[in-house]
Image 1 (cartoon, rainbow, N blue to C red):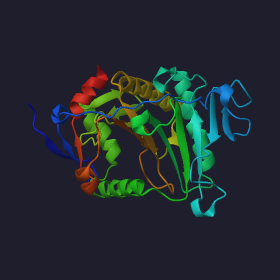
Image 2 (spheres, rainbow, N blue to C red):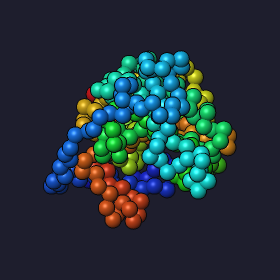
Image 3 (cartoon, helix red, strand yellow):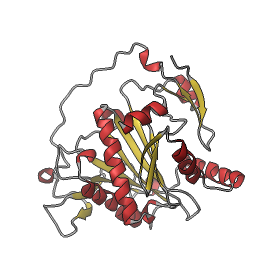
Image 4 (tube, rainbow, N blue to C red):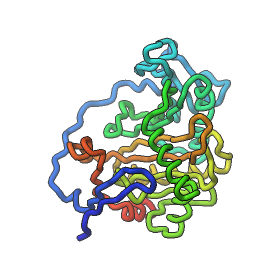
Amino acid sequence: MKKPEIRKNYFQDIYVLADPNRNKRPYSPPEISGKEPKCIFCPNNIQDDEIVLYRYPENTEENWKIISLLNRYSPLSPDNTEALGSAEVLVETNKHTKQLNELSITEIVDVLNAYKDRQLSLEKNNKYVLIFKNRGKMAGASRTHSHSQIYGLPFVPQVLKNEKRDYFKYLKEKGACPFCDIVKIEGKIKERTIWEDEHVYVIAPYASEFEYEAWFMPKRHVLTFTDLKTSEIKSLAQAIQKITGKLEELNLDYNYYLHSTYNENDFHFHIHLCPRPNNAIWAGLELGSNTYINPVMPEEAAKEFRS
């Protein structure tokens, strides 16, 4: 039986308790019941008064493949000076039963290109654009129809400020980008490598806060998502299809979010993917110390992803 370990993030002061035995404890998950109401993201159900912010293909009213709608339920609004910002829901497919991993590589590329388009548009009037996806009830999704969300924020999130602070600390001490070093060093070890090709590297990070956590990084030093080349977007689409497909097999809900630079400062664009198991309840230790217990060792997670 493997012993638990205390692990530290590569370059941030974040500690994780890696405990491979934690899932052996008894647990009774709550029952979730109820049927989803009529899907508001299906083409025939979108109301005439919905505000469409993006449509692909561009000149299609009804036969769209991807559409982005104003999020009516967000507290952020370009008209509210007390909560200035924007929020939209990007519907990734017109097919209700298809999840992201079930889309073709070309279709996922189209979704990523929609992200790029919306980020470029929203960057003009917002301090930071956060693109994220919630898949499943445990990840906070209220609809099963595959979608992402895009927020134009009037501030830079503290989590990103902290990440950039530690990024520059590492850069000053080591003289190298921490993400570039992760790709180089972990790429040689291979034990925690989930997926890679010539453009993109995906890892189960050494101090994973979530079981089956994954980081997606372009091998090229890229500051922001919108700077990715066509070949890099295609590689990212392949990685996303593979890894989210494995999470569907494992019946794990998940969140992912994109982290790009802001103010054009040096950075390395990447994606955090955080699975949300049914029994992953953060209690006093996690909330009080920002220290997480992870029951799945990242080495085992990487092996599972590769299988």
